[in-house]
Length: 402
Image (cartoon, rainbow, N blue to C red):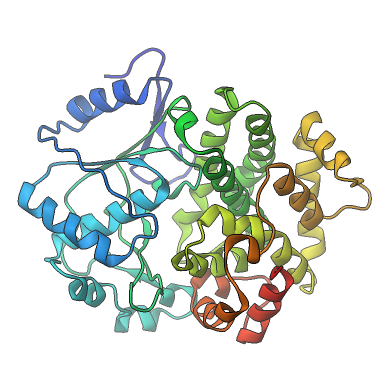
C-alpha cells in the first residue's frame, strides 16, 4: 500500500529497460519498511543481527551466510552504509551456491575463463548471471550514507589474505526496494555523511569526463553534481536541515544509472585506485576526497579533457548556487581562472575532508602494491588517459602523498 505522503517509484524511471529496484521516501523508515516488507514483499520471518562489515572481508561474510542458511529467510533487510548492501549481495549469491567457508567464496568469485574471455573492463567484473544458482532471497536496503551502492547489482568484497577486492554482478542482486529517510541520517557521523557525499560527486565527475557518455547518464550527472555540492555544503553549515539531506540522497541515487551499463564503464582512476584503498582501511568517501582532484589534473594530458572538465567547473560554479560560489570565492578562487580540480579541492576542504594519503593513514610503503592492484581494477582500465604501467598510478599517488 502506498501512502499519500510517500513517493514510491522505480529508481530509474526514464530508462528503457530499468532495474527492478524501487525507491521510497516521504515516510519514516520504520513505517515504510513495515508496510513494504509485509505488504509489497509478503515477508514473515524476522530476525535482527548487528554486524560490522565495513570492508566486506570474506571471513566476516561467511558466518552470516551460514546463519542465514539455518534460518531459511524470505527477505534480507540492511540498515546502514553501502558496505552492508555490498555484503548482502554477495551473501544472497553465496547462499544460493552452497558457500560455507572462505575457500568456497574464493572459488565462486575467482576469475573464470568466461570472465577472462570477455576482455577489457568486462574481464574484471565477475559476471555471475547464468553461472551457478540464481539468488532467491530479495533485499531491502535502508541507507544511512550517500555512497549509493544500494542501487546497482555490483558488489565488491575483500579477500582477507591479499586485500584484493574482486567485483561481482548478477541480474538477481538488485535490491527490490531502497528506503530513504533523511531524519535517520542525522545519526550518521558527519564525516561519514559528507565523505560519502563526495563519493557521489565522484560518480558524477568521472562520468562527465569519460568518452562516449550516453545521454541518460549525462543528464543525471548534470543534474546531480550541482545538487550534491550545494546540499553537502548546506548540511555542513546546519546538520539539522533535512531537505538538503534528502536532496543529496535522491541525487546520489540518480547518477548510479551509469552502473546499468556495466561492463561499459564511466569512471576512472579515482574509482579504480579508491577501490584498492578500501582494504587498507580507507573509506570510499575519503578515497574520493583525496584522489579526485589529483586524477583530474593527471587526466588533462588527454586532449579532450580540458573541455569536459570546463563543463564540470561550470556546473559547480553556475548551477551550484550562491552558497557554493561564496565557498569558492572564500578559498581565493575566481571562476575565470579556476579549474575543476581546484574548485573541487576547495569544496572538499570546506567540508573538512582529507586531502592526502598521509591524512588517511596510507604511507609510501603501500604505494607499490596499491599501484599493482589498481592496474587490475576495471575503473582504472576506463580512465581517459590510458593506464598501461604502474608508474602512472605511482605518479598519481605521489601527487597526493602528503
